[in-house]
Image 1 (tube, rainbow, N blue to C red):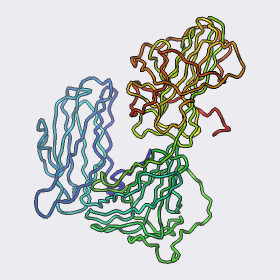
Image 2 (tube, helix red, strand yellow; image 1 turned 180 degrees about the vertical axis):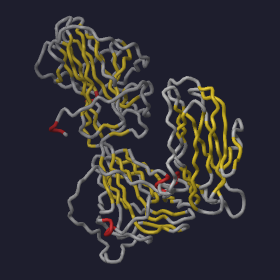
Image 3 (tube, helix red, strand yellow; image 1 turned 90 degrees about the vertical axis):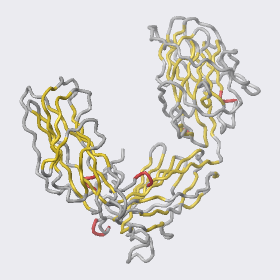
Image 4 (cartoon, rainbow, N blue to C red; image 1 turned 90 degrees about the horizontal axis):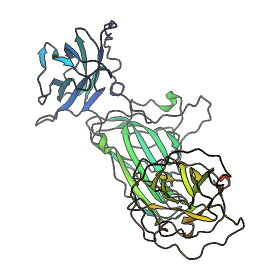
Amino acid sequence: MRQRISLLAACGLATVGLAALPATAANAAEPVFRLTGPPGLVLPPAPATGSPTPAALNYRLEAPAGAAAFDGDITLTVDLAKLNGVATVQESPGAAAKKCAPVGSTLVCTQHGLRPGVPAGVDLEVVPGKKTGVGVVVVTGTAAGATITPANPTGIKIGAPDLVMGQLDLKKDLKPGESQPLPLTFSNTGNEPARGVVLELEASHGLELPERYDNCTYRTTRTATDVVCTIEGDFDAKASYELAGDSPLHLKAGPNALNERLGYGIYPAPVPQKPQAEAGTTGTQQNGTGKPAAGDAAGKASRKLVARKAPQAALAEHGPDLNPADNKREAALTVQNTADFEAEPLVVKGAAGTTAKAVVAIRNNGPAWIADQGGAPAAVVDVELPKGLKAVTVPTACRPVSESLYRCATAPSVLERENVEFPFEFKIEKAVKDAKGAVRVGAPGPKGEPQRHSFDPVLANNLAALTANPTSTGATPSPSGSPSPSTSASSSASPSPSASGGTTANGGTSGSGPLASTGSQAGLLGLGAAGLLAVGGALFLSARRRKAGHA
């Protein structure tokens, strides 16, 4: 998880010299209430003409879970002595009940009683002044018969940079292997310069960022590559900037790309950046123009081989920004590619009354990976049980649609050449020879049923046989023709079967088998493409690599 700098550190408030605020030791019978508030606020200064925009500053008094109601009087004191004239603080005009009265440089706020689960505390309003700078608000509390732990000091900063990332005009329809430049631009619309900036890029799994720079860190996860670059220099207020031409960035569609996403953002650095030579690191020094610093006429990043302890690098923290909502942009890109989902045939053997373990499996043969950016499953799998079989242990990613039909869901992403497995346990209630069921994979349809993925070029392998107690173990011919359109199975879930006892028979095995018709209830894959819709229930992925040779 990305760490964000607290406003106290960002504003340099950690050294304001506030005295420690020890809580009075409570005896064993006294309840302890915790007072909480925001670490800080960053606000633009009041305009030269017109009214300033106020901001809410709320503190909450919390009783521990299970605590009894407290019926004593509570006093909260808001110390405004260290505001330094940058803002005024008053009780919120919209407060439901007035609690506060000014006493010198403080607001004294009283209330009676505290009930667990009932909001309590004080609601304040901060009105910024025209003066820029930093102030501090400290809130403490007292109560007869209780201990109140104070809130951390709240920093109030008036004035800051306001970085705005420009919108890229990217080519959205690409071919695998195609590359395009990233001419990133940004502006500082705030009233203070940014002392260094942090550029963040997030490219989904099918996209590549070919360039590597020493002042950037790179982290690759299962589904994306994150890049964080710290660029030194002063980036003036009311000025715009672009990345220098001698330090270009490009975006390339990989051979596994299909539906991709690029995020790009610019943020103030948390503290003024020291020259890298002083910091003991390497990389090209930058100034506010985006040009290489003096002494690096070639414009190339210096690279020195060093050895040091290497903990996992955390993403850079950010400094204060007046409007963080406009710091980041996103672009969706479509690549002309395909991905072939395949259902694996499955054989279950055993005598009547026994229990057999079996793994229902599908595979993405690629070349593209599949990701639903909205969080819906990348694929759903229907498991139609042969006659005589009953599911007694069902994966958490699967739910019953009927007594003989189970519907499973993958995670929102399935990588290229990845197997996804759903382990079942079946009770063989009746040993029916050559009983036929089916495994079918597709995109989630209107009722959750599998339908054809628009990018899947091969329909025949979306359906595989699930055979119980086959009489023949030899090779069987492949099916001929295309699957017929499906009949929609009911999406209402019946109660999950409970586990039952029984001895384990010969385990279920994957193998070759006919893609036999399983009757009208089985419902073969539909040929029409449907919009992706999320299936119901809390479905989770049960996936692992089964074919190392294909990985």
